[in-house]
Length: 219
Length: 344
Figure 1 (tube, one colour):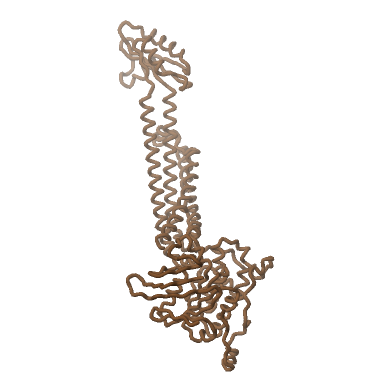
Figure 2 (cartoon, rainbow over the protein chains, first blue to last red):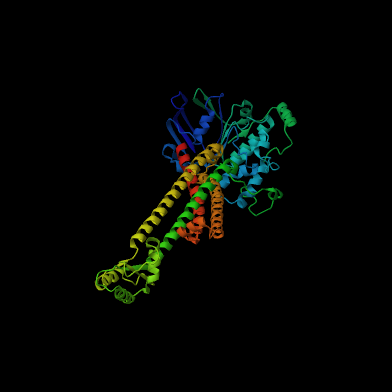
């Protein structure tokens, strides 16, 4: 699905913060990306999401070489990937419902066609009674779930989650984790970037550990 | 595929105590489970979908005011051009429909006979309406401001005038008439005001060109204001643009979202400016009609006839409103695309 070969990344003229990354994300796989703070987890997530281009190496996304993918083709590929950011990135002027429905609006779908699906998903993530509320009123956990629902609404082939449990208490973290596992069972590849050891211990899954810019993989 | 690890019994108990009372294993809803059209109670509470780019984040009142002022100025220019154009047309029409034959006195020439000959000759030409020689009294009246009263026309070599009104300027061949008069009537010459009409049309043309140049400058300043405002709106909505990018929005979709606001803003500003300008035209018309007969107003009327904007002027105002709205939307769309292309 996504393949990295000897990928390196540096910002400007600074030191190389990711070095010689070689790995593959298989379809329907589940993996944790972990490592200490500042190890480059978010940068790697951004590389996976094509919002950064590597300074060296080869990245193949859905069997396409990233270096030859034009800017016009990026939206089409990004629609296959759902992202949950650490800071949620919900739009404060849109209700929870509208935030979750945003990817479908971008696809040009009619509101009457997706309304039922969005409400169903919001109920599934436990936000059924918060769908008319604006994000500033939501708690951290609710924002997190709204962000996850937005990433899932188009049933992407891959889900990238950057510290998805960083703002929630352990019970909710476990609940969110079960949600990701459920999604994975339905066929979506999941990559969860976290440094929450407790979360890692709960699931028997592939671990990708970033340290000093290098990646070690424990299957 | 991932599997949840078995937890120690103690952990299980602790988690069971802390865990909220929510379904333990949420099931992902089957895709399009409600495609059958089941109505939810929640649906009724949904507000009409809000704009993706918040309207208040797009430079609001100040830019609307700028667009309104620009459109007002452009409409005024169109109105002024329309007044001058109509007046020039009227002057030109009056001048084209009247020519004058002048018969200069010469020794041994019977003026009366020459005048009659010229009148008869002119009447034979196609397109000529009435031909009338100015009477002695009229000639004396014309000369009275310079030569005083009690003038004896026989004793002075005074040229005489024949006034020719033309019914159909296209049917009359003025050159042929001029040549015939010069050949057959001694001392006759034809004055067809062509110098005046060419000067008038040149002046009217210059005014129209100047008007359009002013309008182009006004529109250019408006376009630049919209470009700056769009850039400010893009900077203010950086988060929205980034979210739209990562949910897979194309640049054209983002541009359309901004463009929608600017089209509305352009329409508001354009209609306001156009309406105020039209009101000014109506008030000017009313004012000149009411003050008709007063010296200052008469001077204006002498130049421009009735100082009122004609139908093409008002159509021009509608055109300006349309142009302002379209220009505003197009400019903002292009500015967004340029900004996104640069940001990549």
